[in-house]
Amino acid sequence: MLWALTIGADKVLGGQWNPVDPLNTPSGMADINKFMAVLEGVAAQVKFLYDDLAISWGEVVQMQVGNFTAPANGAPSNLGSFRVLTLSTIANQRFQAVAGDSYLSLVEFADRPRGQSILVYGNASQPNSPITVTSWNFIVKINCDRCGDRQGKSKPTWKKRKHFSGEDWQRLWRHYLLC
Image 1 (cartoon, one colour):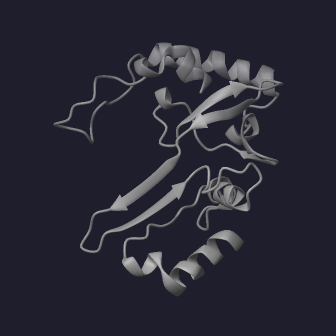
Image 2 (cartoon, rainbow, N blue to C red):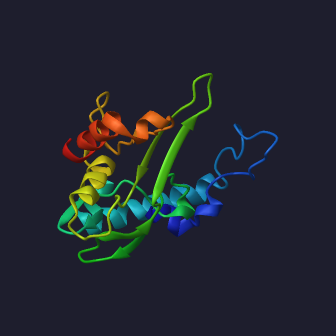
């Protein structure tokens, strides 16, 4: 994040996005020499601030709701992050997410559409609601089965009437709240 903020996130990539060629634009680095100089300077700054170049993003940036704190997995929107977070400095060169996306939905438009979604802050406004913490568990605590990285997780998007009533509804909510 420091290098993008130092160089200017809009000045990192070469060229402009072209809607006619979205998969290949922008392309390359705007100024590789400037980029490398800034990267070297930022590496020295990270080493000075955190004593380690290998410090993880989640050690520096935290998310918190109620008494629940976890490593963050998003970044400011001007850095091009899919998971958008607004950060505030807390202490010891650490940051806390104070705002960000509230609803995420990924939809695959195929013969049988399917989707995943998550209401980031949960379905309750009470500070210590178990529903809120459950949503945060989905977002920050799940480990990826394939690579072991900590990633967010979402739930299947309900799209049929049967999902909103009867036993399916009760079963899904019981799983969502308890697992």
